[in-house]
Length: 393
Image (tube, rainbow, N blue to C red):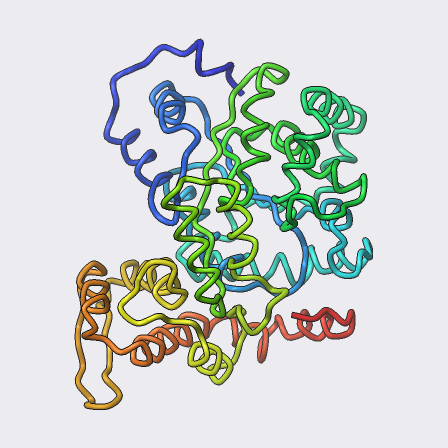
């Protein structure tokens, strides 16, 4: 790993460098901290090493799987080393899967790893080019060095900062937490430097930990460049929750936004609000029929969100147009541009039910390989194992 970007000299931008930057910034990316530092690293030939960390907490849904893996596939296309961190100790601290560490580890290297590999393949990535790293194995390898990292980072944080940062655990500020949960954020920062990665990646809800990682860079000799992707909406948000999100966006209130995200993002803890990668066609159709889909509104509309961030990239990759069917008249409309589809929806030319049904059919097609693997194929044993472990959605 080379030194900080402050010591680097800028070179002329090449087409290859421009391509790397474009792929890193491509949707579902919503933020790069910072684009200037990314440009400096790319222009000066600094090797980019990516990682995304996952809590092990049950079944994989569209947000955890397909949307996240789209970004990993982008990094691979850019020639960036990709790493997936299976955070067993973090999951234990955050009381996932009943707080049973042995269950967490079994699921991590079994179902969870295979679900992410399949998700990555489904969005055009290469599962053979990603490194899966179990957290406890990293800590065994680093030994006392990891403890030193953790202490260095913790010494740069106040107790108040640690408390404010618990939102990355999916918990609200002010919520009662254990002392172990206050260690979660400095551990996550220590993971970045322990893995020697400079491109930490996660949802926008992980921003607080990544900002701390930037702030403590002098302890480790280089500045990371966090990349934050869009958080997919759960299908059953309410008018009130949508209003909070709009208010947070309009006012620029980041605290309100982070609190709102916890409420509305797709979550396996709310199974009726999530589409799992091995859901049956009947389940997908049923969930989307019941989904929140305000007419003439495209902002914070869960169905439009799934279409924009999951379905449309899939159709773009396979060079196929979006075909919408009006169930009442049988009329078929072909859309080659997402902007035109969204314009027609805002003008009331598309009924919410028609949009729901069309998106459902595309999801059914997209997820067919996952269903075959987990329901009828080699992955069946992993679902049976999950049932034996009494893992719920």
